[in-house]
Length: 336
Image (cartoon, rainbow, N blue to C red; front, side, top):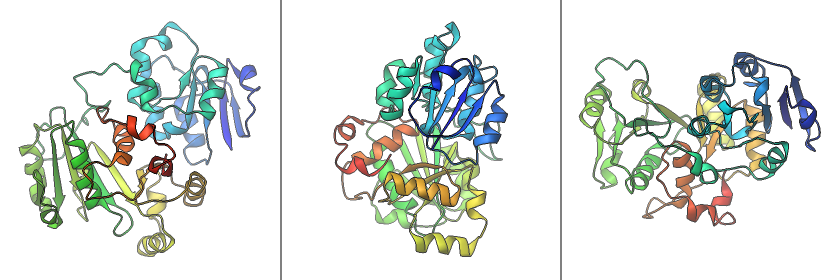
């Protein structure tokens, strides 16, 4: 089911031939929209931008993107000078808002043929003072030196053995084609078995200094393991969940509130063979919003094309997704 939030274009959007479970009409603050839909299960949200108060201020859309899944958003722009400005459109793309249009026909098209980054890359104005649309947090943990402009991505298993260590290794190899990458695992020594350079095993107490030491790199990947401090050093934390029934039940037995506490986190289904419908059912049953799902990957392969779409979604726009996009009936058909 879908939701529509409309104002100026309410009549035009009423002609859409889609199933609608909820419709709001009028002008709303971004907090009102987030409050209404943050824990509401839906397939797609069609948002008439004029229904959003202060929509010409790009920070309003940024606030929305931090709380709702932008993969589910189709944004109908009003064609005003502000929302037609190339910088405005580029900022939307940096927030991973790829499905935007200025007419209802475009809404119909995007509903059936959602954009990927590749479809809107020509509108993206890459700013050398940022990396992939991210900026560093306003405050960093004690002992954490300025990371300049690099990204620090933390992978953490939610379910036992969800694959953070192997995913960190594969992502490191993949990103190293285009970026200077360092990988760090915390409180374990599994990296020694990969026999790969720029992969380090440290204790939680050593993590801050190690990150500072390699702050000149483009990307730092952290395999958090059970560390309670690793997430505090990250610009982005990815929580990995292996969605089998036995692993979910083990997770809930250990912490009955873990799914409730993970609703606003970037949850990725790793080593996942679920279909689109299965993922939708999973989101409905768990109350989670799945950021991405990654199929089983070959850690002996020199290049896992299936991972590049995920890396692009994280903001690593140099990754090549052309081969993946041309093979949608193959392995890429397994995930969003």
